[in-house]
Structures are given as C-alpha cells and as structure tokens.
Image (cartoon, rainbow over all chains, first blue to last red; front, top):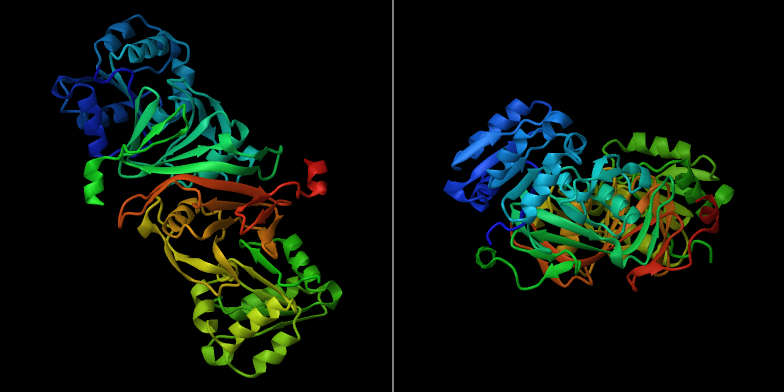
Length: 266
Length: 266
C-alpha cells in the first residue's frame, strides 16, 4: 500500500520539491495534513508557514501540543485519525520527546504509522526525534566522547542515530563520537534540503544534498576515553545522494537502485 | 638514525608540547632550526613568534624566501645544510608551492630529508604543502566535486592528501569530495594541536586531537558528477588519537602500537 509505514525524515531547510513530495505521499489533492510544531519556540509562526507550503493538500490543520496534558487529551485521536500526513517542524527535539513521550499521541502515532494510515514527516528537530537515539547537543569541534550528548528519541526508526543540518554545520565529528560510543546504532547525517524516505528496512535518499551513513559495526578497535579524542579504526562511511537506497539491517547500500532520471542528468 | 627522513606535519595551532617535540627531534639543545615563513602574509611576525617558541634550540634563524630568485639563490644551501630542523609556518600553501616549487631550495630540502640530515616540520599551510596533492580551497558545505579545489603539493609525502584545522573547521566533507575524485590518495584530516610524525611507511599521531584517515580504496561505488553531491559507498574511515600508528602503503592502522602511557591514563 502506498505510504504504508512510511517516514519522511528531512535534514532541515527543506525546499519546495521535498515539501510537495510529502503532500503527494499523503495523497496529493486528497491529503489531510496535520502540523505539529511542538519543537518550535513560536508554534504559531511555524504552523502558519507550513500551512502555506502545504496549500495543495485537501486540508491542513495545526495540532497545538504544548503540554503533556494536551498530548493526552481525548480530542487528539479524532484529529490524527483523520490525517493522511503528519508533519513535525524543527526547533528543539527535547521539547518533542518531553511533551509527547509516552502520551496517547505518541502511542497513536506509532499505531497509525504501523498501519500505513499516514505518512509521518519531520524536519530538523522533527527528524532527530524519529530515531532510536537522538543527538541532543554538542557542536564542539573534535571527536571526543564529551563533545556530544545523546538521549532516546521517539523510536519510529530504531537502531539509528540521526543528525541533521549535517554538511551545513560540519557535524561529522559529533556523529563519529556518537557511533563510537554506541556502535549498534547506524549514524545518519542528513544534509539540509535532503531527506530519507523509509520503505520497510530500506530508505531512499531524496533532495539536493546527501545522506552520510557512518557504520562503526565493522570497526576493529573503538576506544572512548572519558575525555580527549576517541579512537575508531576500520569504520565504514557511505555518502548517498538522491536516488540511492540503503538497507538498514544489512547495513549497506542496495546496488542497482539509482534513479534513471539522475543517471541521464549526470 | 634518529630523525632519518622524518616529517612532522601539524594541523595548525600547535601548542607548546608539539613545538618542543620538534626541537627535540631536531637535536634538543643541539638543534639548529631554520624557519621558513613563505606562506605567511607578514613573515617578520611569524618568524619572530616561532623563534621565541624554539628558544630551547642551539640556534634559530629565519630564511626569508619571498621570491623564486631568493629560493634559487646560492646562499640558501649553506643555511639549509647547517640546519637540523626546518619549520614551515602557516598561511597560504599556494605561496609555498609557487615560490619554492622546482627551485634549488625545493630540491635540496628533498635531498636533506631523504638523507636524514634534518627533520622537516610544517603547520597548517606548511602541512598541506607536504602532501602529493593539497587542498587549495573550498570550504563550502556539502559533499560535491566543485566544493573543493586541489593542486599538487611539494610531495614530501606522496599518495596523501592532507587537510588541516580538520575538526575545528568541519572539513570532512571537502576531504571526502577530494578522495572520491582521487581515490588513490589517502585523505588525512589533521586537527589543530595535532600532528603526524612519519617514520618510513608509517606515521604516528601526536598531540591533543585526532587524525582522521579517509580511504576510498575499498569503495564499491564512486560517482563524481560535475555538480551536485557525490556518491561514495563502502569507504573506510579511521579516527586516530595520539599514540596510534598508521601504515601508509598497507592503508591501515598498525595494531598494538598504542602508547602505554596513554593506556594507563585512559
């Protein structure tokens, strides 16, 4: 089924093509979009801005969730059940996990995504919270254990550690630090105006930038001292632009899946 | 022989420990240091600053080479033959290759390094010029072929592509772009206050940061379109702090070479 269990995870600063793609995945002219701007400091502004960008949908409405009681309120269920697409804005990912974590909204979103009833999208903080483990801070340069802080995300996509604004903010060091510490987690760095679209155990890359996958699974030696630089030898790295597909549990790119349009253009 | 063919390549902003190590490698209280500040826009200032930092040596003198005729002047030979250590300051690496490239100074330095007559050190631009291929520009975010410019260095260490101020300026993307384009070259990103010290086919990491090695040799697919993001799958990455040794022609870390001091401290 189109949209079954699908997540569209954007690295921030998404351009019109990605936002249009979200509306299409949610049903195009028949799409019913719900915007959740919990991460944002000024949710009104974020809601209004995205409502305008999603104007091609049949309906767009904000769902204001600023407190845990709002996220547990009975009225939420009808709003989410009517939606074909839910969009989480950027801001602070810890506001999302703090306000929504474990609430009725959290549970229902997981259920609706699993049923394929809606496409769940998020950008920036709305992307970070999708992963099993999210990076909550640490833009200090250097590959050190104390240069990055992590915490559990809402786990729509377990086994992953997602970082956003990746190339634009030069964040590979903090992603390397995080996967050195938690080598089970695949590290995904998503550039701005770039997204992954999940489909079962795979994701496809969309947008104008690249997704960098850091895999410490093959690393021969990992040392994470309490302070100072980490050591990490033999890790793997993949840089994947639009059209590439990556298999999450096989931890490798799927070959022969490039977009033929892109082949011709290149 | 102590110092035979040794290069000490620093990623910029070297602290006292690295600078003292250079003087020790050059003979300690018997060291005769020559400072070449060709890369610097104000060589007097750079010469004076390093002369003070190398005060523990028996002698320190600047060798002012601002033009190709100065680099071809007969007087240079006696100065370099008397040196046990030569230090290249930071600035613009293209000034070094433009002024020194192919001159008598260039040839004599290669000869004296090969004979083990002196230790050749450089920081920042003075590090970049050591490699076979140096990055000459491009700090634009994103992993794109046009996000990085390269040119030949003075090739004291062929087969390498050295980038400096690595973690501090978030330069992994440009290093990835460069090795995707030239996968024969091992990409080395040296952090500030961090250095590699070569010994034959190996280098050891010194200093407070890490050296990141990017190896596109094992990559299964590399695509470098004229514009837009590159694709690079299955590349290897190593993050090596002080005490680690890397074998350049085997393209891998040497195991069991960690500094026991560091082991105890960790």
